[in-house]
Image 1: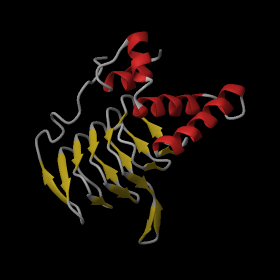
Image 2: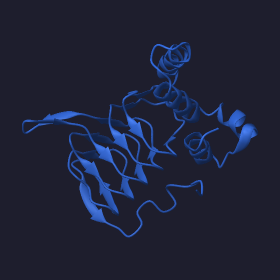
Image 3: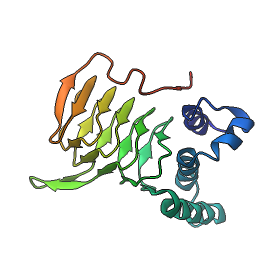
Image 4: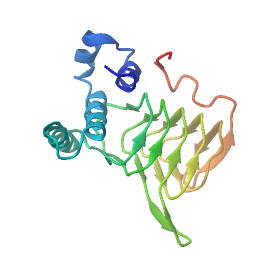
Length: 183
């Protein structure tokens, strides 16, 4: 198992090793992330690439997760296992991020600019949040449930509301982002 899969697995209840992988396979969020990683690592038209793309498509309908294979996602992604739609376009997401159910991260067209979000490390996104446009979310940021974000967010911030309001905090994701694999 490589470092990325180990980090993803550990984020789900601190699971490690083969026994942890087997237990993690029954967690929809981890299962989808594992298949997503395989899709991005395998050549598109290889037998393994086709197999994992078909499996990813099946899990898309079964669990409601949809992450573009063109998304660049760092180690330790955590998708909550509540089966609600999670839609993520070809964006860039840093390491050790949490994404809750009913979240949309995608592109928008605003002021003549078409773009997609870039998320830093240690970002927690609450249920129902929407992040759209050519925006940058800094490191150690908590986006509260049902927030609408279409603006840049600096490091060490809390975003709350619709429209979103930025509140500076020293460590907003403390006790929200857990089970980080020590490298």
